[in-house]
Amino acid sequence: MLNIALPKGRLGERVYTMLKQAGYGCPEIEKPDRRLVFENPEVGVRYFWVKPHDVTIYVERGAADLGIAGKDILLEHSPDLYELLDLKTGICRMCVAGPGDFQDDRGKLLRVATKFPHIAGEYYAGKSRDVELIKLNGSIELAPILGLSDVIVDIVETGRTLVENGLTVLEEICPISARLVANPAAYRFQRAEIDLLAERLGREIQDI
Ligand code: PRP
Image (cartoon, rainbow, N blue to C red; front, side, top):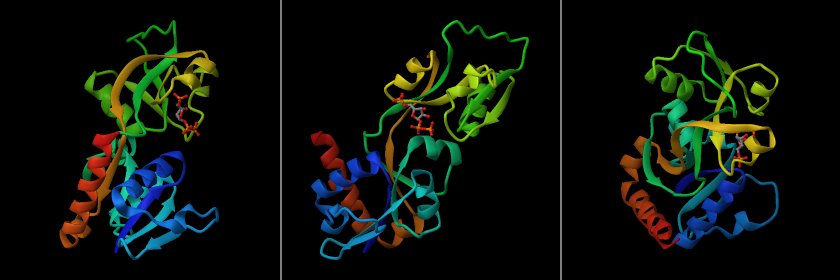
């Protein structure tokens, strides 16, 4: 039995559909109830819904053998796990954003609000730009509007949140998408099953 942590929400539902098409369906999970664990012994999978940010915790600690995590979370926390497949979904960009007329004054410390202090810190260290990182947990776009920060480092998907808050992309840091990740010990002991699942899922991606 493979234990798979799915991120609760739109991305998780999309990935579950891909898993189903790859032969790993689980009728139980499609019923509208509030359970969190579902299994289909016939195809050897047990799914559970977890908060997107917690997927890597479950997989890293071996409570799940496999999981679906955004590259943003993998870059931010560098968890000790294997990245097996780019699922080519949940596609977005990690960007620096701010007011359209923003001019960086290198004589001043740049104040950067973000949910991703590690990614932002590495990015500005690479540019030898001294910054003050302000860690927030959401609604990041508010920070420059209220003068809490000069710019933000955040995920941009459609760009709507930025536009509707009068902000714009200033720099692109990297592309982001969902990845299939595995616990290293689980991968060692269940390699054949995991490789087969990754291969079948990979074929679904090519067909998209
Ligand atoms: C994310 C991100 C942006 C928004 C980008 O926030 O932090 O705010 O989505 O999407 P868009 O480019 O399609 O508008 P999320 O929805 O996770 O909410 P949060 O503010 O609670 O972090």
